[in-house]
Each structure stands twice: as structure tokens, then as C-alpha cells.
Length: 124
Image: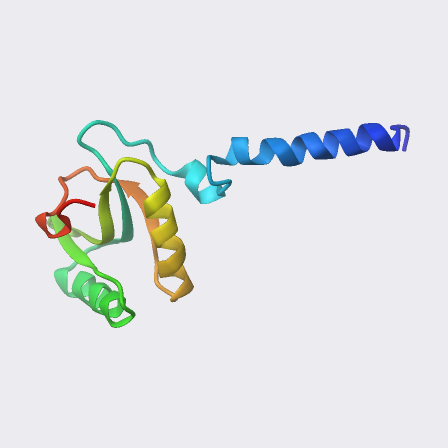
């Protein structure tokens, strides 16, 4: 190794300090990969999209049984979304909710609403 310990420490310290900037405000890789919301397209926490209402309702029932609110949003035939939360102007609340949901063994991803916020969510 030809670098001095001082230079190695400085490089490591710089990398550690820069990591949250590269990964997003919360320092989360998932948050850094989340899509960007625009006017009329808030952030959401979703279980996913399902081909049938029966499958979507089953996922929503599992979430409710574990203490989460879940809304089933039919977007189009064969594309039915299950949401845990919706309506946020920043991805942070959706990412925080996803951490709680995943800790209970349920699927969750941060997304951007494309079909209108369901009335069940009201104001977040």
C-alpha cells in the first residue's frame, strides 16, 4: 500500500460523509431509487399491482390483519393496485411506512400516483 494512513482516513471519511448525499435525504438506497413526483402525482406506499380483484383483496386483507390500512384501487382491467398510503408531497413518509410494512413481512414499494388519489385517503 503506497498511500499514507492520513490520506486513507481522509478518503474514508469523505466517502462516509458523502454517502447520505448520494443515497437521498434519509440515506436510504430505496429512497434514492424512488420515482419523482410532480404536480398532481403524489408519492404512495403500495403493495403492488395484481391481475385480479380477488388477489388484490387477499393482499389488502393480509395487510389489514397486521394492522395496516389498505385501499384497493382498480386502475384498469388486470392492473389492480393495493395501497398502504397515498398523497405525500415527498417520498420520506411513504418510505417510512414501507419500512414498517416490510417489517411485518408484507410487500411494499414507494411509487408515484398516476391514477388519482383514492377518496379513502383523504388528506395525509
